[in-house]
Image (cartoon, rainbow, N blue to C red; front, side, top):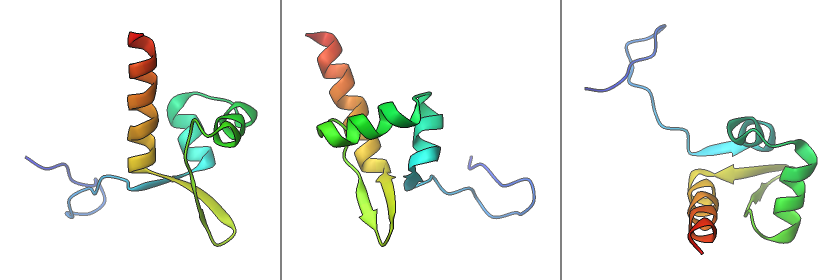
Length: 72
């Protein structure tokens, strides 16, 4: 059964990209820590015009890397 938006009868679509602010709030990280992750290469991001976004794929890759690191 699909989820629906309370205001519309259209099914919800899984978010495919996050702003830096959305992503850091999702993970509970601070702004500086998030930009440090990007600068270090641990978190990949994409520049879209003047805006920097983190795609759902980049988010999953980050999560996978953290899990792999935790298993070591």
